Image 1 (cartoon, one colour):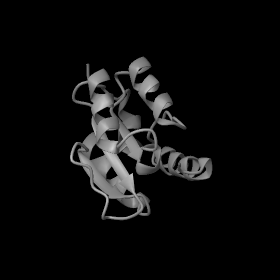
Image 2 (cartoon, rainbow, N blue to C red; image 1 turned 180 degrees about the vertical axis):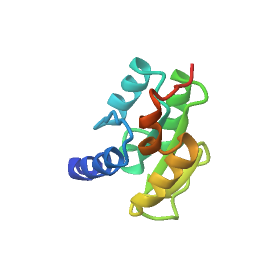
Image 3 (cartoon, rainbow, N blue to C red; image 1 turned 90 degrees about the vertical axis):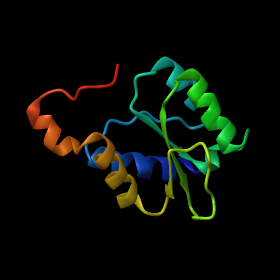
Length: 121
């Protein structure tokens, strides 16, 4: 399992980029969170969360709760790729995650001045 410090550091990077973040410290908590907040824009899943089940199964579980949910799988090595993930990127390259999120959703630093961000229905 990823140490809580790693999750906190990743959350800080995303929040510094002006993205809103909801965190989960276990896969069970992550599955409960997407059930409670189905309108989140995406899930960033670190492979260390996949202790209880394989990551592709975890992604399948996420999408059974919220069909079409964007899932980004993070791994410390590029040898780990997950077929069901929309994107597989290195967990050691935070700029790649920020660039990907900005390309998908726009840059929140620019959007905040224009009013609320429109979310998917």
